[in-house]
Image 1 (cartoon, helix red, strand yellow):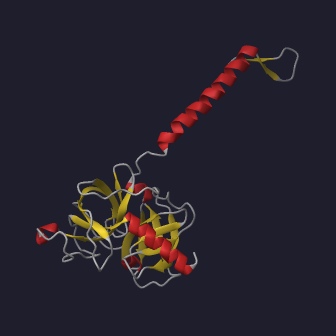
Image 2 (cartoon, rainbow, N blue to C red; image 1 turned 90 degrees about the vertical axis):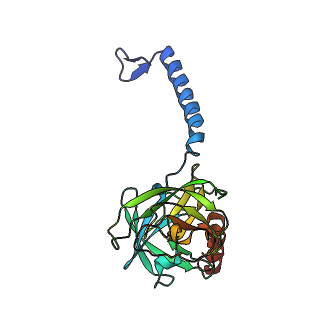
Image 3 (cartoon, rainbow, N blue to C red; image 1 turned 120 degrees about the vertical axis):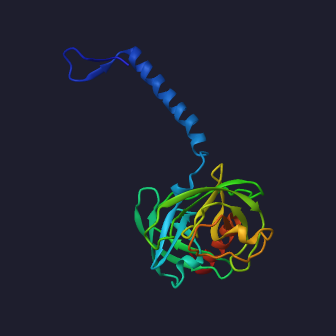
Length: 252
């Protein structure tokens, strides 16, 4: 683009060739933006981009948003609170703090809904993963081994070992081998390699002590003192279904 100051005038003019070049550049930029925009929406989502630490007194857990202002966590993370009760949320990305208000607690599964400030975190994708056996996954959580407020945010790799393992104490889920999973991961999101939601971590255990009994509930616990290598994950589709039911029940 060529610019020149008009002789004897007060404004800035463009040559005809400059105007044509500018128009072509604007069209090219628009097309490029539209062309580049589509794949950006399909970029894999990092679990830590969606993770929030939940502080509820001496309890420390995790949460993530499924809507603009609606977060999911485990019922045991908000233990002792009724609907309307407040927790502190800390975003893993940037460390922003906010208040989360308990909207409802499920009586069917280890799930609680939190209302958050709009846009506090980016919501997870609306597309869920299949959760098939062998699926590579990544999960996010906070290390609560040293007590509330003391841990780092972590992202761990794993793989689905049991695609359907429903446990009465927690709900409908699956088992993921995830070495290093630890206290504080309760309520943390689990994604596949394409950024689709697999589910939410509800409990952990050491598989060595229960070799050959992967489907059994024995050994799972929501809170542990040390890292484990196996996580029980509530399935994404069941989480969304129960969240819709709870919202309808409270008129939210």
